[in-house]
Length: 429
Image (cartoon, rainbow, N blue to C red; front, side):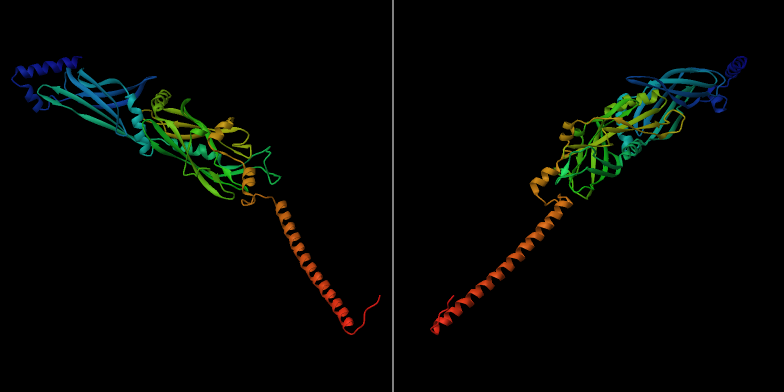
């Protein structure tokens, strides 16, 4: 305090001595305050707002304070989407270092726009925070500014891909009454590969594309499975789909996979982009931490027997922890917390509406043996029948030969009688 008083006295003395304030600036005795960005952090979070707290600094090189001549403003951008701006006017500062805290709300309505830009850039967002201080002292003024830049990455689709890949394996229907040509069979499906990627992304819907490579080891066609499940972020429902709501790309009308063939099926699930602001608020409120859960089940009906993937009317639920480091100093990324099986019932009507049913017995009845649906025993019977037919033909040929011989014998006998008659003799018995 004493030093400030001495400084003021010195300035007054210089002025009274004929030294102008402009001369003091020229001499480097006085200067324009400098300023910029100090720090950013999250403030209060509720259902429809997220506070952003920004600290700025102002360095006043003059030996005296400046009252009401300092303005400060800042802007926050995520992948070029304007997320927040703050402003403080008519700030008074003291000599030396000064720090101010600015509070504003994140632009809630722009979070869906950012989400689209984030996914279209492979889940990478550039973070830019610009801070500017407008200061004036005496005849001089300035607007020093600083920019804080960082890169924000997520791998949500990687978590979905890892979760859905848990469906890979071989599954068979048990306790079935399905019979082909009188032989009991268990329909089997082999899921060789499952991959997941983002499809079209808008501010209304976000498409999740799950592609399955399916092998049909059966001797009859199987239908394309029905797919149902849900996705939550911090217990907030992001997608909840019934099988009859899922679009299947590039598939024939009947959707059948022929026996012995391997084909791909891409299932399109729609996520509600309008839920992104609610999720992001929960993410910020949990110190940029999200528990992500994805649940799914595939099902089909073959010959009246339902087959589910996983088996026994269960669904796979996989859990992942997602962290970011927008304004929280921590490692970002996705960690796998494992998968569990949970009861899950897909209704028969839902499976039927998804066109995931097929009855090989009906097809056998309609098409006969064209589809190769007969059992080995039936094939043996066919061979036996063919052999019998060949035997019958052989017997018929032999019979014809015997008849010919009898005819020739009769002819011989007739000829003999004729010769006797010709010489005037008759046969007596």
